[in-house]
Length: 137
Image (cartoon, rainbow, N blue to C red; front, side, top):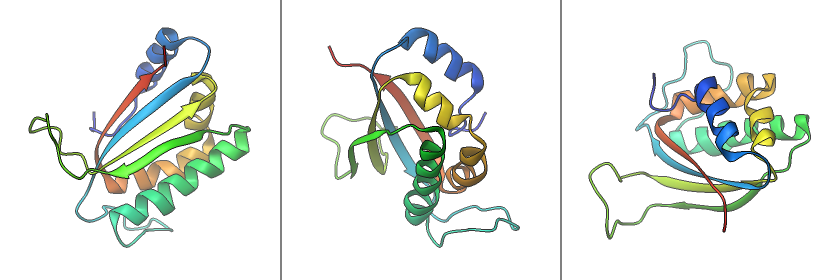
């Protein structure tokens, strides 16, 4: 499995653990030095950050709108330096997004719009991805 692939089993398992109610998803992103789009891809972006923000996030928002979900961006930012980190903690950017329920995120991820407009950008520009579900106390 790729380090940025999200299996249906992982999504199903997460939904069982998370249950209903709000969930905040934390994304740690490692970008490719240069995008790796398929040769025949219709909408390649010139660099990985624009591929992520214009391509992936744009496609994700279109998918969310299509399925009637309004995710809330809590935070997005770049990594400046690590104070207590290990060698594997060299991510480039972080995004924190809140959903009313995990099932809403799942509807986005399973939509055809996500598959066609967002996912290809993610594979082309994200080298590694950590995706963590959290809930406030």
